[in-house]
Length: 171
Length: 216
Image (tube, rainbow over all chains, first blue to last red; front, side, top):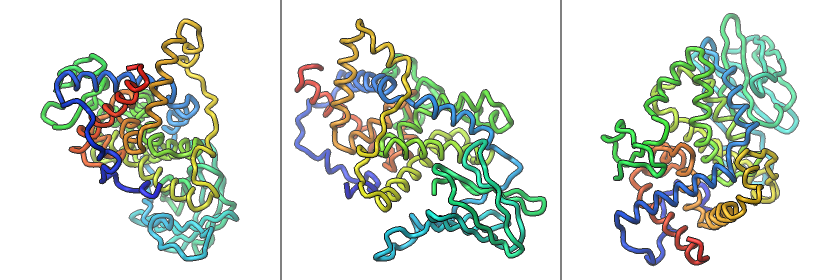
């Protein structure tokens, strides 16, 4: 599976000798019918799980036009060069909005972070539309807490009169 | 190109000037308006978006061969991010592509993370059977539907045994309603222009497999 991350640019497994009939209008129609039959099979055998659909419906509660979004600008999983011999490196994340930068480090032991510019803030660790835990950043902008629960998470920061939410991701 | 989609509905004329694009049963031009309504606080519009685009997002995560647990998390992350960016997306009418691309990038990350942190990268070993039963599945359990069940399962089995690239492409294409080629492109990181020819080859390959089993 070494080609798993390929951008689909090769057609290697398609480059077999042609054993298919030449193209034609009736074949196009057959293709469409087969695709539709497969679509129905997918709807029966591999539909969106009902519980998951409900999570997406409930996610509407997460929309907040008043909060600024701090976008993910660095993710060690993608952007860092792996260190040889380090089998379980911490996940380093950086989020940026117009006004604040949030550095976060996530390990199995917990979550630590730093706000820039440094300053106190109330922080909620969100793990879905309802659930969250609260942390506090000290005067130096430092904060720490338990590892976020399994699944996607985001941080909602309140600094003075501003609310910033980091982009959702799974740590 | 046929004026009828495979489903037999009239193809939207909104796409006539866009090459390589198919109109699905949902008018994608309507998506921009739904996104605007949802951003203005309309929960029903949001629900429509979940029902109209959720199957596409699910297809994208399924196409990437994640474990069930990771697939669920990638799906959730895409919708949480969309909720978060609601009202901020520059081209709301292209929300399908935005969601497909977001889901794809999350899938690629989860694949990387699982390679790094789990002793096995065989997603089959991590799979848990889904406990959700759909009405369609229940219907299939009835005696009368046995023959249809057999045909559907056989088709699905042959589909799952296709090469990885064909399986990926077809899994995204068979989202319901059918995605546009722009959405498929965003879902898989492939050029829009290569989708049509690849689709044709993959469907013919599938048909050849079914013919070999004498069930086409």
